[in-house]
Image (cartoon, rainbow, N blue to C red; front, side, top):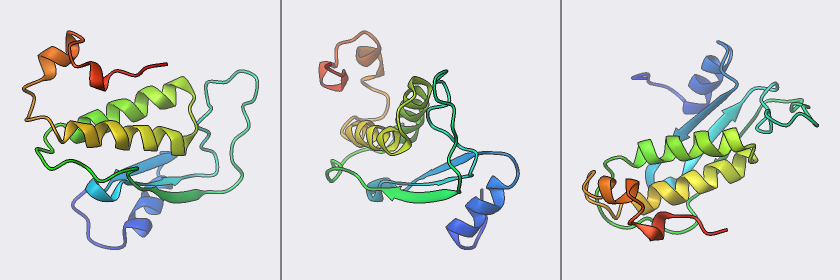
Amino acid sequence: MGCKGDLSDIAFDQLGMKPRLIAITLGSQGAQFFTTASFNSHWNSLIDFSAATVASSGRVPLSKPPSKGDPTGCGDVWGATALARLLDGDALRDVISKANELASQNVGQLGARNLFNHLEGKLSHFEETE
């Protein structure tokens, strides 16, 4: 954004312009989020479409310290993970926690060097097991 000022004030000013969720990655500090009262992370549920009644904000720390390494692509991994989890209907804190986890794992990779292997399914330590 290139703005100076309190992060909370800037985020809530932007929320008044239509977005219902703003998430800000904070590197090794995890991520912070701000929502409007009309945000609902379970938006795709046809059974219960009730939204929160108040705006909220919070911070979700990393579950463990990140590896030392190259942060190239970590924001992309974070954003893709968060979007996929939101589309799947996960709760917001769970969404951010998983995005933090996978972005943190990406720090151990050098640039986009392993992207081809990952896309080919050869980096099994990144794959989820259910």
